[in-house]
Length: 171
Image 1 (cartoon, rainbow, N blue to C red):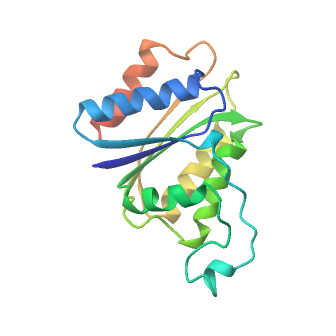
Image 2 (image 1 turned 90 degrees about the vertical axis):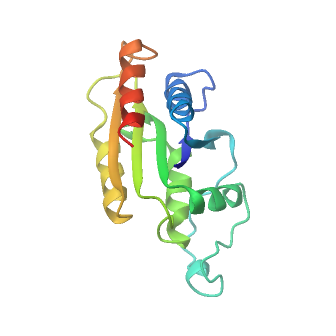
Image 3 (image 1 turned 180 degrees about the vertical axis):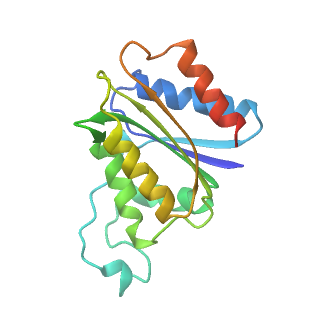
C-alpha cells in the first residue's frame, strides 16, 4: 500500500515525531511504500474560504505555498496517517492547515484507511482530536485503522511501539 504520514510536531526529536518514525519503519518492514512529511516545517497557510477552487480554480487552490507538494502525495495515498501533538485539546495548527486545505479537492482520491498518532504531556486531552479524526474518516469514507495515544509517561516506550506495529499489521 502507498502510505502517507503527515507529522506535525515542531520538535524534530519529540514524541510525536518518534511515533511517526516508528510507524514508517514498521510499514516499510511490512513491504509498504511510505512517505513521511514533516508538515510542521512547511509553509502551509490556512484556507481563505475564497471559493476560487470551486470556481475558476476548477479544484485547485489559489494559494501557492508548500501545500502544492502535498496535493500529489495525498492524491496517490491509500493510507493516511496523521501524527500530531495535542495543543489545547486538539490537533495542532500545523496539522489543521493541510487538513483544511484539502477542501479544494473535497477528499483524497485513493485514501481508504486512516490512522491517528497523538501525544501530549497530559492525560485525558484526546477527545477533541479523536472526534475530529473520526469525523474526517466518516466524511472521506475511510476506514479508521486505529488510534495510538501517548501521554508523558508513555512516550517513546516499547508498549507504544508495539501498539503502532499492530496498527500497521492491521492494514
